[in-house]
Amino acid sequence: MRSDTTRQTVTVVAFLLTIALNAAATTIPLGGQATNVISDSFHVYVIPAGYVFSIWGLIYTLLGAFTVWQALPRNRERAVLRDLGWLPALSGVLNSLWIVLFQYRVFVLTVPVIVALLITLIAIHFRLWDHRGLLRGSAYWLARAPWSVYLGWITVATIANVAQTLSSLGFTGFGIDPVLLAAVVLVVGIAIAARFVGRFGDAAYGWVIVWAYVGVAVKESDVLIVAGTREGR
Image (cartoon, rainbow, N blue to C red):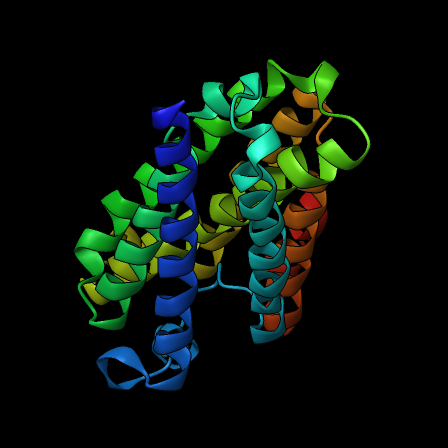
């Protein structure tokens, strides 16, 4: 019982820390520049248009709903939450660490952190999948949907983060046309996402991928080969 209460509390604190640092990154801003300004300083062809990043509002709203739900006394001993364990709290810590590293332009270290976050979200997905029969109706929106949307976005964000980091290091793609290289990366990404959606029937994850890829096409609409990869075509 005590360990369950501790887990609930730490999960709440980790979520609040993430929200606070995200707000600081855009309002103070941490490191002297807002996140979107730093991101736009690198012109790589796999970053969506600015409006796409508004999805963070949805992600944090859904995660907030999950955080409140898991903290309710009646859910303290719920099997699915015990199975998730400390993973939701870990995701908040990793997200917070990534924000600080990115804001202070320590790009090389952002890559292992976002990969660790991606792996954590995949682990959460599989544990929730094991309980899918019990997570229906409101429980689906409070438990599964938040993490499906989050995983979808971090899938895309990992690709963008790696591309930005390589750009910051002066990587030129071994002389390959950067537009062609971006197109290949996007096609591989959508193929993996399609396989994931087909295997798990996770519509929320799939819609996030579509949202992000359309955003890439909008931003790079003057580069036909990149725009042509939209929605896997």
